[in-house]
Image (cartoon, rainbow, N blue to C red; front, side, top):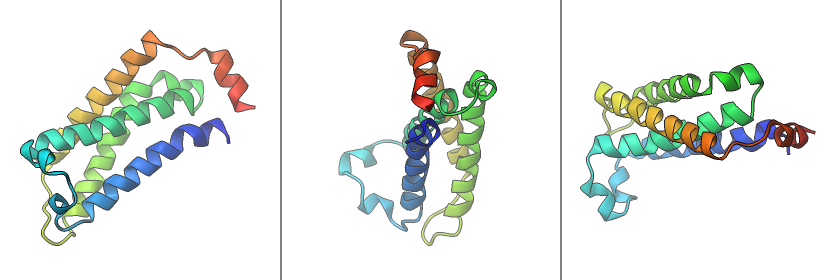
Length: 136
């Protein structure tokens, strides 16, 4: 499998999971009860922190060097943009509503997730030689 696909398939799969959950008119029916004890904004932040981290990882390792150098702001931007599309999507789902505050929580979560991945990447960097070897 190519390096590009190895890093971008998890991003697409997780974005698909978010889309699926956003399509549910009563998502609380499918979630464990302890999750409902958290604020809606916290759940949005955690959900999008994971997507932001996956995007950062994909931009660093599954693209070229110029995209990789801008991975942190690009991961936050792309994840935030997906958050906007998710809020628009939810506005069409029965019994769901759309909120700009949810988008703000999505964006903050994206920034936290991408920043955490960036810190982890600096602690345990993957050598460029191993990335190049894996691209072949």
